[in-house]
Length: 473
Image (tube, rainbow, N blue to C red; front, side):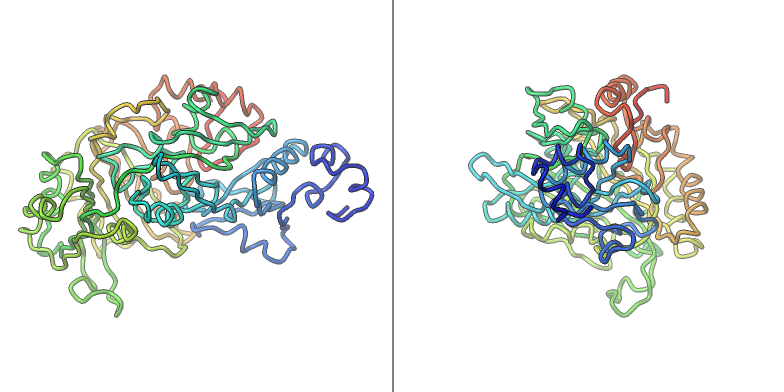
């Protein structure tokens, strides 16, 4: 039966009744439905992460919350799993031959309330959409290093952004989440209306349903003193240690990171960086250019070969990290550290060198500040005591995945004694239950599994990282 079947349509126009009447996906979903033999199926299922892609039995191209609700109810009735994809940056465990993938990438509306300093963000909106909507009002969201990332998935995982040390996690600034749960209900989840679920959603990812939209705080920022300082690590091999020492006494208005990687010898690369082992210090300062320049003076004294630090509109904040915005294949892992052990930094510098047979980008992010304080409304984001985040990431072909993951594990193992846990937003690849458990405090992990058990005991939803319905799983 198709979406135009007169027998089905004559019985009822109510989507719930259609499901009970034995309808098909085409009958109950208003948006396009793609199957493996449909035109557009591959375009719909493939996301930003190209190591793997969903291969579901059905893709629902949702246009609104009604489509999402119908898809969830129909999947529950059919007993098939549900995954959601807006941009596919963090894809870890794809559907393979079964289930339904709900694509939210058409749901990109953003509505700004300038007086309240809030924005309503639909499920598929990227941070670029929010930045562009907020900017004319002199406001900005707590977005991350790459504006192309989906705003909802980023926020549900915590969200460590360019202004994190001043304002905390993006998850700390959510006012409301609209969510379709496994029973097919569209719930308005707030701190007062559903406090347990509101706590779990902000940090627990997509484990509890399909988010159709969220209301978030905006902050009064229209410009930052930001960009990158680039160094030739052959000349400045101690860069990571110097950056670490520099972070010891910074104000919360300064959020920074350091990355080390080999730059290819290609015509599009600036000559001072082409074919070199590069250290890049990323700066986002919420203050005047004068104060920012005074703060970074010790770093400039180290002799950058390229200086891209300047006052910029927040709309241009992508230049701070200057990350690739085209889909590609990669794997990555991380540790949240109490502190950095300087004696271990030379090994990380060597790991990132061009001599490594497999390219590895090594990064350290400075945490602390507002990230270390509990939010006004508690949430499940874990390990706020971490002072730094250590991440490793490698471009990866599918047949290199095992070798790359082994290399990452070997690189991070010496740092395990300093680790307090992991950040799931910075884990790019398959995630086991020990990794998921390590993202939360023990008591929070138990609580979040109990909420999962109450809302989705059948594991209908298959998010990028799966919280089991039991802490003992």
